[in-house]
Length: 340
Image (cartoon, rainbow, N blue to C red):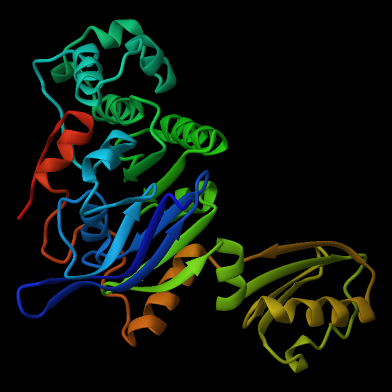
């Protein structure tokens, strides 16, 4: 049974604003799935449909085997949600937030166990949230999402406000959850974070899924410029004649370091480069640099829409300009700010 499955999912606002179009998506149990897209791509609209905060115009969606329209309460009992921009209650303590989330979910448990998992101590638990830093609030929000040991976690910008240590701890926790069989549906604009933690990614552009697979497979399909640095025993006086190799964009030779750095049209050219260098000198070491996830993302968006990506930032607003629906709070007990 898939954790998330959509078939032909479509959402149109008004007469003409297509937020999500014919979306076929499948996320397996125990998988960390990165959901990427620029501002207005339709990511938050998709999440709101999965949680039955919005109804699709066409198509269907199921979460953990439950139809989102007919069995939304059953879904919310088994899903933990960390919405982006969630506002907590300043006058309540962290412990009261966790206890409230437990009450909403109808589960028992020790709040201290949750605090330990997300890197907050008992003193933090008994402080009012108004005294928390942004990073502490984010940790508490994640803790609320973990209440009830959910089968699916939906995390929107989970590392927002965290320092590098907190981000690393967040990634470790996500992987632990996946290793225990929990599916994680993960939205982030930090592409390096996505690359570090996700098993597969889906790239959404103008409401359409333009690419979906592991990062390795997508990078292989994309190609993209690649750089290779080869260290040799000694650079020959007449060089390597690399410019005659098909797909080589340029090369820089450093005789003092006995290295040659070669820019290639895509990663498939590197084998020919190594062969040519090996014909002229003894190879000591090879360092290869793949195309960045950011460049791959932009290229898939371009190919999917026929247009350049407008702006460099990834965001998580839906096509109607909103972040999460205010009702998102019901799944983990917090107020959620709505931007219209």
